[in-house]
Length: 231
Image (cartoon, rainbow, N blue to C red; front, side, top):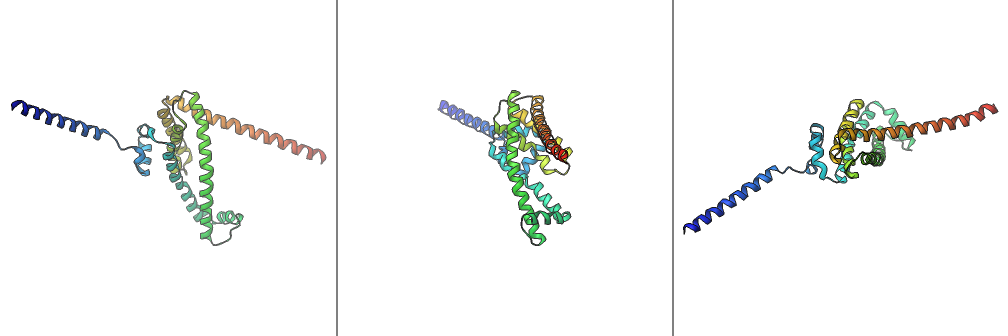
């Protein structure tokens, strides 16, 4: 009988220990970041970027794309509001060029839709291309992650630039730094290598842009020269 009691007590103690261990594990498990609302994401990436990027490593490309489509509405709405207050003549010209002639409210609506379509389409496409170039350099500098890891770093890193786009120098640097944090965490590389990857991409863009300008200038000279000779 004593053995039975001891066995029952031991069993109860084990169950209690298992329950405590389970509760401890559950308390340590954090809510996945991709289940948080957009405002919490914005807060976390701005205030605790390193922790935020570590917690979002489990996300897919779709989560970052959804974040981009929502947060990119901010500059579009602010630009449309500012244009409706201070640039009615500009809106009228833009909408008239599109073949639409109506009252100012319709024109503002058309301006918003044009901005939305162009920003969403061009911004999304250029974003994918830019991330692809940066990702190439990240891999050259020893990055271990996938394209989606680079995309998340770029999208979440651009949060300050999208929210406070009207103070470009500050938010541009801020987003640049966040992007470095994201690439460093997502690809297991040093911040220096992450910086070099982004800088290399910018350098490539600069060289390509300079090449295009030189080609245009040379072609312009070739076109103008014959005109001057004939003149």
